[in-house]
Length: 343
Ligand SMILES: *Cc1c(COP(=O)(O)O)cnc(C)c1O
Image 1 (cartoon, rainbow, N blue to C red):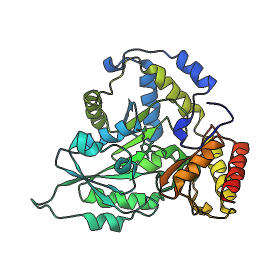
Image 2: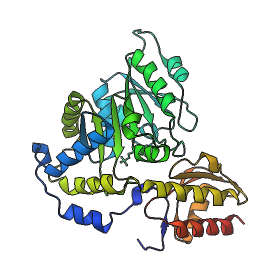
Image 3: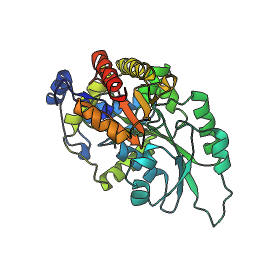
């Protein structure tokens, strides 16, 4: 990829830095399926510590982390509650049905967020007609919600309704790091009320591969067996864990830079004609905007001709995500090019 290219498709496009590659090359490794890869053990220990959970498990992807959580919390024929636009519902290839045999019932959120009353409205008395509701999933930050952040008290109220009804809670925290940097609320405070949480090292943190699932010791023990069953047991995986460990130690604070760039992009775009964007809704590293005079696919194609990459996410909606691959100059060029395209 040339350095002239401006890649705003996702924060997953981040390539490992030279220092990260060095840490990976020098990583001490063992066999993690046999439980003796020291770099994996160190990453799992530090991740659990940051999240304030007793244990954590390294996994190949955020999808696997979420699906392990669903598999651990449910049995086939159960039901899970999740937001309609959530990653688990949109982008995980039908895995809840395929891997755990559960029914997904969705809650319609506003920018991905919903209320305790909405959860209460979904509760049903035990009855042989119904699939038992076992798990509620939240997402923070919410990807299709525009990188939106859950207010802590709203999250706690939603979790309390679930727990009072005997329903477990899981947080898809792929970008929890972004929520914490933007709000000043620690990761541990965000996840205190959840039974389990998933986090990604391969998004804004910039590691090439990897995610983690965290929860109680018994929960993670159970997840470890299902990880093996799902084909996620890895051997000298300390090589990739070293990238994640480096990211965790060195790249969390710099997420604030991504958030500034996203705001710069949103503010710039808000001054252009034929676009709809609400800069005040840009809370982290994601900018969603609507284009009125062409389809999102046409816009993405026009941008690509100028070496700028964005993803269409609906017929007239595009997503731009900032990361360590972009800087202020690239954002300014992006705004200029879009100005030329929309006129
Ligand atoms: C990226 C992402 C994941 C995990 O995606 P993988 O590509 O499987 O690592 C999970 N949840 C959210 C909200 C995401 O944005």
